[in-house]
Image 1 (cartoon, helix red, strand yellow):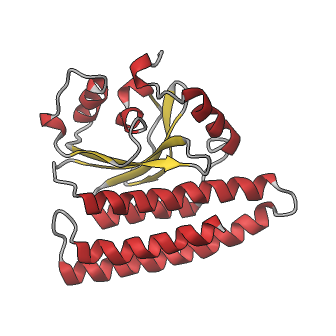
Image 2 (image 1 turned 30 degrees about the vertical axis):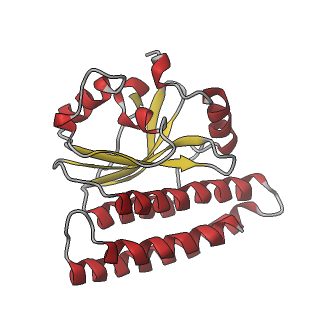
Length: 233
């Protein structure tokens, strides 16, 4: 299926070049990326979280929590295709109430047909600033999504983006190699497990309110920002 021109960002050629460079879909993603989407699902209390890679004609889902498998879908039928048009996180707080006469109408209808009522996504922006996809949340109940929550989701997406960049650098550089990436991914997984434990404690203390309380989001976002700094070095 051809992608409507209205769904193509102005930098589509450069964006696809970045996607090919990092070879995100060339091999299954490591467990650490599944741990990142698991953290997103846990923090925002959503049954489904995933990394969506927007390829030339379809959207693929190489990291998932809440489903065993999601097959690729045409770009016109995925809200992720609209989400990459924005420089920041975007949320459809009530899909049933969303206007269905725009470029995202087919994707909204597809999401509703799948039982979704809420969708939020933050860009997977690589070091060259090109966006290759989004890190997403989806659930069956509409809900507000606060600016603080947008910031926290963007922080998770930033860790994922930097992780993809480091993964590629290690795999493509002989003097670094896959063993170094395995070591980095192992340390990052341990940090994420600890962060997931911390989130459970915070949610038990402050409750699973909607939107997620700032007292829960802030320490999590700080830890994610620290992980991003380490990965960027």
